[in-house]
Amino acid sequence: KQEVTQIPAALSVPEGENLVLNCSFTDSAIYNLQWFRQDPGKGLTSLLLIQSSQREQTSGRLNASLDKSSGRSTLYIAASQPGDSATYLCAVPLGGSARQLTFGSGTQLTVLP
Amino acid sequence: DTAVSQTPKYLVTQMGNDKSIKCEQNLGHDTMYWYKQDSKKFLKIMFSYNNKELIINETVPNRFSPKSPDKAHLNLHINSLELGDSAVYFCASSQDAEGANTFGSGTRLTVV
View 1 (cartoon, rainbow over the protein chains, first blue to last red):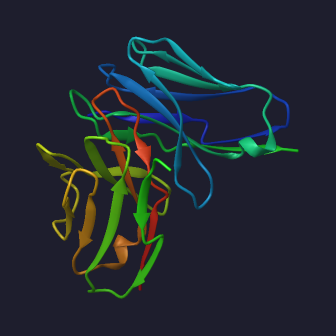
View 2: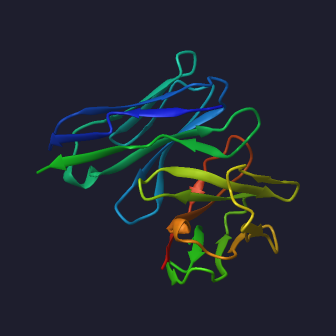
């Protein structure tokens, strides 16, 4: 059974800092990993999708890495801004050919101005 | 806009009632999903459905049933609502096993 863990559960940083969010998963036989952002009371916004054959993906100030063998992914946010404040979730498929996602419990990020 | 849209955004209802939440996607995806986010913000899959199979999470009560009139719609019907059903329900869709999941904005259900 796939289990996803995210640490830290909460993180508060001053504006301008670079930061790293961590995600680990128990079943390394995944074909992708997806990072999402959720603002309070809102839906999920997909940030980055990394296929199993890839090591990393970049979008603007965001960079996500994937190490399947160790069951880990990181989301790196450069030069953080108050607008980055949100909950960040990582998700992987349940396992095998399943497309349903298993989510971590998220990291609540606060960027202080 | 290409998107996954859900209605209603908010739903307040009494215990014992039957209600439905609608979901539509215009992305041309072949698989749709329903997820539940509980009060602790934890997201959990309820159903996935494409034109070939319905996969039901074993923990979902049979009071919940998905209904798909066509490939672009997956509605969620809930019978005999209970207080514990209060949560935010998200619809999502994806195309093939490698595709990204796109989520709707959620329906906040409150059972009183």
